[in-house]
Amino acid sequence: MNESIKKMITEARDMARSKGIKASIHMHHENSHLMRIGNNSVSLNTSEELTRIDIEVIQERKKGTHTHLGELASAEELFKMILTVSEKASKSAEMDFEPVLTVIEKSIELETQYDAALDNLDPSVKEQVYSAIFRNVGEDYNYSGSWSSGGTETFSVTTANDNSVWHRLTDQQFMCVLKHPEKMWELASWQTGWKAGDVKAEATIEEFKNILPVYENQDGFKVEPGNYKVLLGSQSLGDLVGMTVWTGCAGRTYEMKMGWTSEKSIGDDVLHPSVTVLDDPSNENIFSEPLSDSGMLTKTLPMIDKGKFAGLLYDRNTASKYKKEATPNAGCLAMQPGEGLADFLEAVKGEGRVLYIPAIHYMNMPNMSKGIFTGSSRFSAVLIEDGKIVSPIFSSRVTDQFENIFGNVLAISSETISVNTSNTYGRRAPSAVSVPTWMLVDDVKITDCADSF
Image 1 (cartoon, helix red, strand yellow):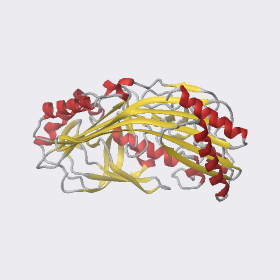
Image 2 (spheres, rainbow, N blue to C red; image 1 turned 180 degrees about the vertical axis):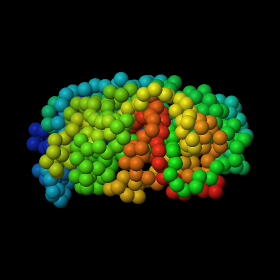
Image 3 (tube, helix red, strand yellow; image 1 turned 90 degrees about the vertical axis):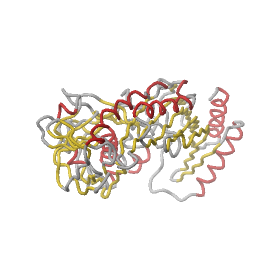
Image 4 (cartoon, one colour; image 1 turned 90 degrees about the horizontal axis):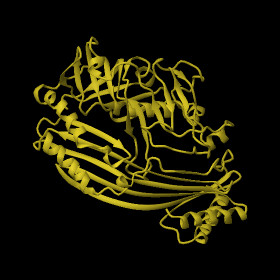
């Protein structure tokens, strides 16, 4: 995104402002690559480079939007688009509140999490990493997986003032699944980061080799429905923390009485005292976000503070609708670590029977207002007894409430890890949560267990 493109956008903004149009312009450029693995070989190797221009125009209680896909030729071309969106706004139905134009608090240029080597990573590097895993772990297994990587660059202005935001970053999301060809059990490994060398074949090789003997030498254990001590791994926590906060601490959900905290007040005890979750743009495990939806500089905000309901996040339009103040949130969630142990096997000594569930597969919410979620274990789940892994477990379904999971905490890892939560099917928009590497929970409901993996 060179200076001439930025100049086109700012000139079009000035043209719109001279005509009294309240408009925002957001340019999004991505350079994305995706490799998929299936049946021990590359099944997909694709790249795309896309530019989008998002335009929003506000006219009192009316709003028009448009997304242009493609490069810009001139400021005049962009201004014509703004005029078209303005006409769309005039013809739209009135909203029940007055939408708010973003007011960028300060001009910012940020690329602290950008790595040119990852942005331009040769696909052969990915193939070499996967090949190293296959060779070292064993080529008799069936491997699949995906590895998305690339760069995202954005530039935003509004007619509210002359400030602008330019943000460039890189990210990657790696997954490898090992499947036994006859027994059908599956192991999985995830990695992420924003630099080219952050994904390492050695990490996945070690992870698979550590758990393989248990799966190869022990029969699967069928978990009878009931309540168990469960050790949740980082992937499980990444999904759970995200769902817990977005359904409990989002202003719109709270105001509409749809979330699990709707009957609570700020300051109420809602989770275990050991649980603290922040919206923290400064956390190194998270992809940074310099400005909030309303244009304010983002700040660290408490969502859950030592188990207490500590904060609600209001975007600009929700704040306008419900007569609240917009919050300087980044959407960068970070669950704080515990104290003491990092090794989960040490942590569960003396705890008797424990189910280790590294990831919750296809997690969904049957009842948002009660905070009820459900999902199955599927990948790499094992039975632990007295601090020792004794067998794999068949695919087991967890159906429980956020308040129970995060309310019956026995121990939390002293180490944290980044869990990539980006959607690889749409626009490239890097997102991640920072969570402890594990959390031990009592009285978790297992509602069903398959007869196989």
